[in-house]
Image 1 (tube, rainbow, N blue to C red):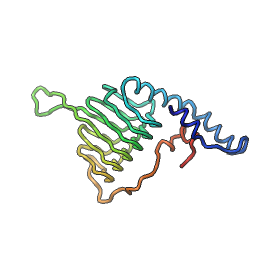
Image 2: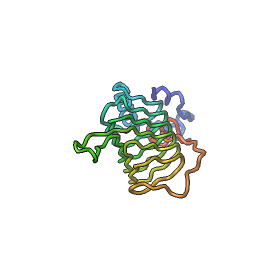
Image 3: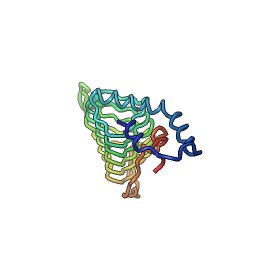
Length: 198
């Protein structure tokens, strides 16, 4: 459980020192947020989602569909996003999904006179970063370490470490650094108050 991990791995300072007082003030002030994200994670897990250790899903996220189709790895941060699960959504570890992102696994067949529904899974690999207000459409695979720019609309797979921007999203000529070592949840106030900055 996150509380036990945070307690065991907490940053420790000398009791009653300035840094100790500052740490505990941050912990107390961020405690409501810690409770909210823990409740969201607990709710998703009891409804069938598989969520790894220390991952954070903002309590104002909109998650619709069959929750057992959602898999999230360790140390992943999901802001106030919209996940529509008509098919599986698989999100790796150390992923950042910012506020306003939409993951849409379902659509309609425009070639069908009955406008039938179609659904395909979305896969997001480790260390990917999906920036604010991006939209990922059904059947898309975002490779390890790939970046999707703010407001991008992704209709095709993004290879590892590539950067995609625009509507429709297109790959830039440059790639992201491949030696990624960060833990994004340590930047979230309710965890940073306990673990410190890395």
